[in-house]
Length: 277
Image 1 (cartoon, rainbow, N blue to C red):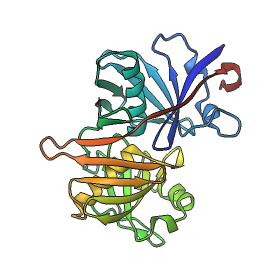
Image 2: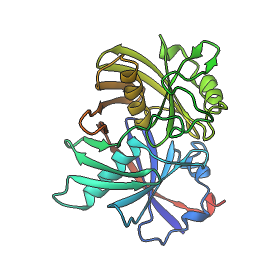
Image 3: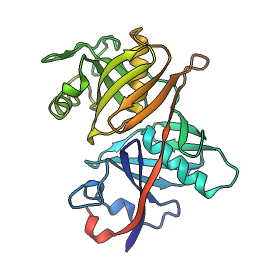
Image 4: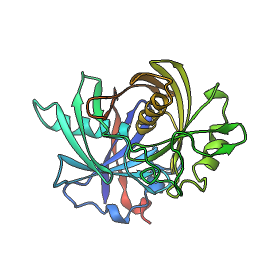
């Protein structure tokens, strides 16, 4: 059968969105890595499958480019929120369930959505890490890279602060560090530079996806890590290769808010026979 999809992106972090809320598509039989392949498939950083939720407006299941499942994705959440907004009149708030919990969203304007990413998890067993260590100063040293901050924003992140993020060979560094023995579930690797108290430059290597143009949970993790190190305030613009995201770590309830764009690139269909396991 031919399966319809929407190709969307948030600041260049791109997704193939499959709507299976009716439960009539053979999603379980699909090889998500084949769909994500940029040469032989549709091509994307993550495949997003929409399902019914008993606890929220919609359930979002996230598959990385290698086929592994991810707990959360901020950029995909904004895209999914737009799908629901387009279906409903006079609605500017949507709740989205993921395997990591429920997040809420609200429309800012015709281009931007704010996602409440919830509270960051900062304890070693919440990241999770392989042993009890200080999450503000992880005992990791890989050549010139060391002393990262660990944050879980639905996914485990390690944020390294460097002088020149764009001088880093992200593929070489990220592919090694994501599998460091301290990360039993692997980790997303952020390479950040603090420009000012309200401005961060960031590149992210995502576990299971590789280098992406933007990473919403990575941007949240970078702001939390920078503030914990007293390098920034609780609100900053985070510049990524694909665009900018405004991140705020709210003091009143400890929640992290992310504001950024969501866009539809095109819609299409693919033959499921070509992408089966």
